Length: 337
Image (tube, rainbow, N blue to C red; front, side):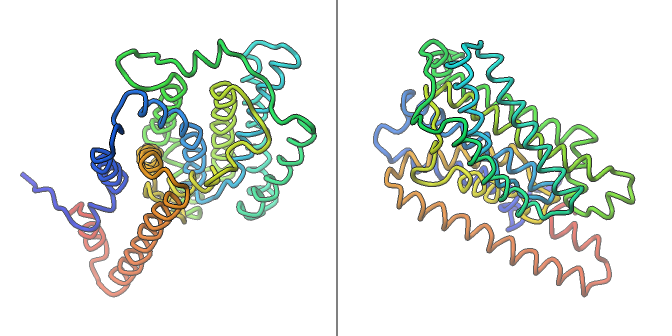
């Protein structure tokens, strides 16, 4: 029977789970931390970040960055609550309209990157400002849009009585699992990893890289739009500056993606690990109440992860460059041989 080898590579591959376990141990020494009310509040209030982080993760796996995740979710919340309060449309139609906006934003981002060959960083950065301008046009003088106590109570209520999680959080969990299954168990999902790892190899293998890239941007924007629309209903209101106090939602999503183990150059990563990391970050924020402490601790953790990845990549390239049996060395380094 093969013994499990605990080394740097093993710890790095499971760092999201290790991070969560460490934070949960710290929570044991925090007074009244593990109460049903506190867990429900922490997970519910941080669910929007999970939507954004998973959207950001799928684009990064494909070798791109989607900087529109925050503004796409905010605009979706404004559209969802705005159409409900102004046009009196039912919630399902309002959510679908918000998601349609996400599809359009994702399509535009993908076309800019694939057809016009604009860097994803620049394309999505520009789309940030466009979405911001559209939000001001849509809600120029309103500090807050919409409120529906019945829908608000439904998303805040517990669907499963013995679990301390809101309906909003459980819907997010289902979405994460669907995306995880899509990436891990479908041919298209595996192609996402392929184009992120090496787009030229993917082209030689017959993968339509442009279509896959556009698809990843669309999925990212749809996740953010759906999460933003539901978050507006969950919180009972939507405004242009949602989430801009404290740590930016975009920064939280990016941090969870990197700490979760997604390669910044693409080709590897997992939305499930991003989800686990985001839960750990949510608990960490619940332990450290002050924003400055949250920023400090989260920044240190992210820097350590990036430093490890950089050093590991340098050592791996050095090993593969000077030794003859490259494949065996690589597998041994990964703990697979």
